[in-house]
Length: 156
Image (cartoon, rainbow, N blue to C red):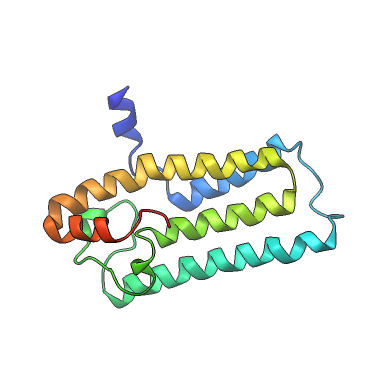
């Protein structure tokens, strides 16, 4: 089992996991029509999607400004710890943004079982992406990264 878990680390791009979770959410809700929803659902659903896209973009831009990698398959290429801006609030704003987008999808689908997709996304990303990244960053940056982990939460 441990070998299987290790084999899954860094294997699937996080945006693909998000897309698969969105598809799963639609399927478990019985493939509802995406039109004909109450207009009042559009505002909070879009607000969450826009928030998620913004959080994603700010996270990526912060990494670009710091000239470090945004490649989720190569955390060992990280050249420094980005701890300013949005990274003062969350250690993983790019993944948090994806979770916000999925939450907007939950609102649009308007079925409680759709929440399962967000839970699955957070669990998968935490286990197969974030925890392995944290392990590598702790090895690479030692005390500096441990202190950052103590100051800033993993998600929010």
